[in-house]
Length: 163
Image (cartoon, rainbow, N blue to C red; front, side, top):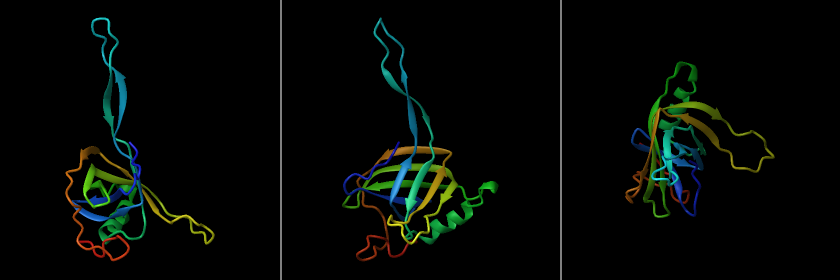
C-alpha cells in the first residue's frame, strides 16, 4: 500500500498513543496478494484478497518532531541489538484535522535511517527518512474525530509542544 497526499490530507505520527509530529511522506504498509478463488459449477473463480503480508513502512519527516520521536530514533539506531521496538500509527487527517484513516503497527523496529544530503546547492526540502519494520500492521477507517494535538505553533501548522 502506498499513501498519496491527496489534496489537503496530511499524516501524523503516533507513538504509544501520542502524536509526536507530522510527516512529509509515507509509503508501505500491509499488502495483499490477489488469488483466484475456486471455480464453481463451471464458472471461473473470482479474484480474492490473499494473505496479508506486512511490508516495511517508510516515513519522511522534517525537523519539527518531538523529543519522544528522536529518543526512539536514537534507541532504534542500535539495530544489531534489536532495541527500540515501538507500537505506533500513521494517522491520516483531512483539511479540518479530522481522522480519515489509521495504519497501526505493533513492535516496529527501525531498520534503516537515511539522512538528507548536506549540499549547499540542493534545492529539495531536507527530510529524515526512517524505515520501520513492524511485526504486525492493521489498517482502520478513521472515526472523523479531531486529531488530539495539544498546541499548534502559529503560522507553521506544527505542534508547539508535544507531551
